[in-house]
Image (tube, rainbow, N blue to C red):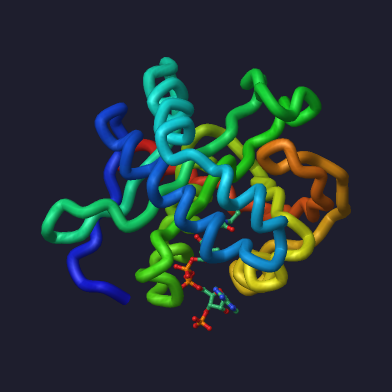
Length: 185
Ligand SMILES: CC(C)(COP(=O)(O)OP(=O)(O)OC[C@H]1O[C@@H](n2cnc3c(N)ncnc32)[C@H](O)[C@@H]1OP(=O)(O)O)[C@@H](O)C(=O)NCCC(=O)NCCS
């Protein structure tokens, strides 16, 4: 694990770093999984614009992991019940890991696990009893990541990734409720 990593709530000023990290993750992690043309067509500034829009929304739940120099190394965002999903209209009424991205140079250092644990804790604080994550089925290492974190594959669905058709696996984890006095601490 890297020393001195701080998790803090994402602000709209973080949108550019989030767009850059998201784009790099797709290009590095999904080479050979998604067509090269799809990966090359990804646009950091469009991703950043989308994050800026999400982060400006009241009640958006997103956090960044930042190192001692203030560099953003990764981020996670929750999808919340009753939220309108621009690309997945059937995704409502669930607590979900909307996004979880760690910048490729920092993979396998425990950052993804730290962000995921935080997302789960925040879901419990928001009243969620379970959390879902939707993962491209061909991304076997991401499935391994969620399985190691205690998630179970509960089924699949077809979907789109940046306009490209892809098969997804839905992972679920049941969450422990807060201890009765936890909200008073
Ligand atoms: C998935 C992702 C967030 C994992 O982040 P990370 O910081 O590398 O994860 P961790 O270091 O906490 O890994 C925890 C465990 O997951 C598994 N894992 C993670 N990456 C793996 C890989 N490339 N290959 C095999 N197992 C892997 C391992 O069991 C690992 O433990 P270990 O390193 O002790 O063996 C990161 O790879 C990423 O950003 N990927 C691209 C974006 C993405 O697909 N996000 C998820 C979709 S919602």
